[in-house]
Length: 340
Image (cartoon, rainbow, N blue to C red; front, side, top):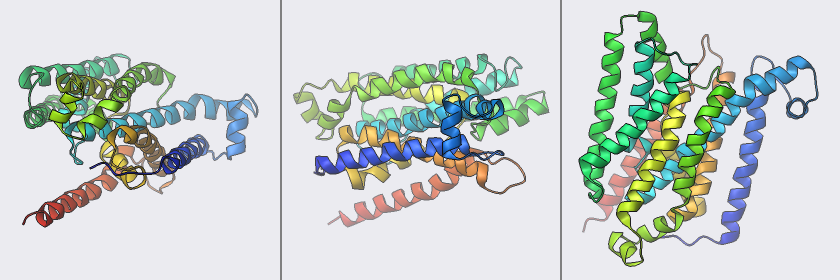
């Protein structure tokens, strides 16, 4: 059932989320070994301040902040889209195996010595494997397959990609490459440059455009597949577009940042009490929430006292796993309460 939320409230929530993302982006640009105030950050962004300050903000921290914003947004958007497609609040981008397959492509490049984490070859391989996973899914399940069959096929591809990644690490002749793979899989935005932004952003943007273009179809689908078809929605085409959008966006994100989990699951759930359950109206707020979550997590890993760098993927998993378990228990209670 779609909950009715006043449009003024939705507009206010969206505006507040935009403001929060801007503040967190400024905080990200100012956080690091050299702390900078928001005014100093703005001054450096627009060509003021000293050369060192401009280099820190514009060359070192700005690419990291852009990637955190874009990757968080596409993960939140993908989670909301998949939950709307499957009408299942536990759906997430990893459901169709795209992140795991993208990680396998990147890991293979590292293990073979073709590329390191700063090479162009690794993101290209990761994005290619994300597409391979999508087309394999469609080939196995078929374009008109039921949702349960899609879920089972996605789980099989995800498990296969995870096993292949572990096998590559196990067979890697270079222990340093295996160590580099292990750290990369933890998910991080450290040492990212505009080269990574340039490569990842077009794929993330293309995926976001595809997903956003289906807003009205999601709204119709929330009434059931038969009703959606009676309203002119081609459900098979919708699935294809959503899976392709998720593969483009998440593949581009994983290619440059490694595995960052649970943002796609958490962001839509945080917004439903404020925005309502309409999957079409939930897309933009979920994207903004995902961006805010990843920006906040990336700031947190830089200010938490530690003897070594904490990976942002580790932090999101530490927060996300208990949240996921809570959702499972809540669904269990709801199902138990619905039994007569």
